[in-house]
Length: 190
Image 1: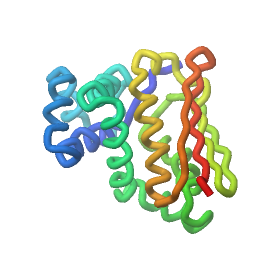
Image 2: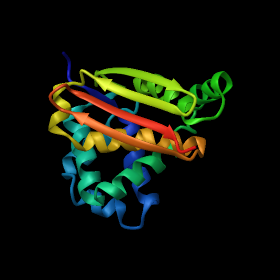
Image 3: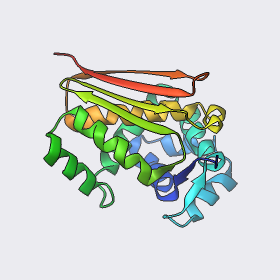
Image 4: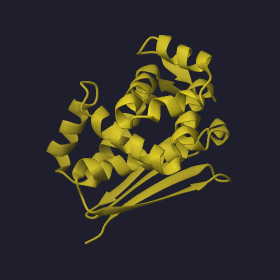
């Protein structure tokens, strides 16, 4: 089983987005992430993949620097902006044409789109119906347990799917470390 990896461009764009998120966000995260890690992320070719052991330190720095609640808001905001990029927009447009605008549509796009940015994290599964969507990452790589902050990011990414649809849906998530399974369930409040 190879080590999970994250597309360098995703890490670079997230790091850059910190400056526009909140006035002190970039400084708070920089204080948490060693300079050599920041330099390695910034200097990586955008289409390359960064090992989890490197990107995980950035994700950890974001959660520690901002706190879990603000980190989740950061990722939700970042993802909403990120999906408008040329790499992801066609996937989102296709999902909307096929399924209409609702969180389940965006969860479908999430399950497909994660492969562009995340490699070897685990098995992705999606259940969706009217007023309901569930994303499951099962058999996730044991290395993710070294960086539990990724589950904050994953929950936020799922929350961003609700934000994209501008829907009144709730989100619940759970992590079962023994079974190596992350589940995010979104439901319509109506």
